[in-house]
Amino acid sequence: MNDSQTSPQTMTNFHQSLEKEGYAMVPGIFAAGEMQELGTRLISALEAHPGPAVLRSRGRIYGSRNLLAAARWLIDLPRVPQLASVLRETLGPNVGLVRGLFFDKPPERSWSLPWHRDRTIAVKDNQLRSEQFHNPTQKAGIAHLEASDQLLANMLTLRIHLDAMTAENGPLSVIPGSHLLDTAKEEPPIVLSAQAGDVLAMRPLLSHASSMSKEGVTAHRRIVHLEFAPSPMLPDGVRWHDFIRLELD
Image (cartoon, rainbow, N blue to C red):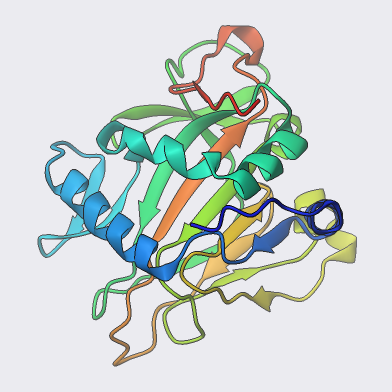
């Protein structure tokens, strides 16, 4: 783990990129060996966790929609100094972890996602009447609601790369600035790359997609996807399914 503090200039550049482009890569947060150990521990936790939250294909795990239920210990990841600085300065002192997901693109079992924005949040009860939330759904047995743009604009996602993300193993593509929802000024897509241990910070409203891994590729592309909110409070009595205060001060 890289325990060095983030310099003021680095943080300035980070926030400028996050505000303008909707995303920023924070490189070298974790060592590649740490990510391999994390991946092994995570798969063991998911294999031991029953229920619909764990996604399988041909008996092998490729994802989880309710990661915190199986691996609550992941709360330690965003507490490393650089990520703590990012979260504290972006979302404030009351920041909490509200959802965790896991994705993998296994060899010979790859998949793709079309262009989309992350508009849903996990809640305790999605049947409450509210003008701020819409389209109640159930995902892996957890109630979800589509949240307002205002709420989503104040959230942040950290995507922790357990493996290198290359042009061959189904990388993430983003449309810079699309989180601002100004389609008249939409930029062309950019294909991202990352090393194991890099962390991508992105706004949920950033338009993004991913392609399938190329034929014959043997590399996995595993991601721990953590969503954060600035406050435990939601409008109209709606409650987060989870709100784990990070206590970064």
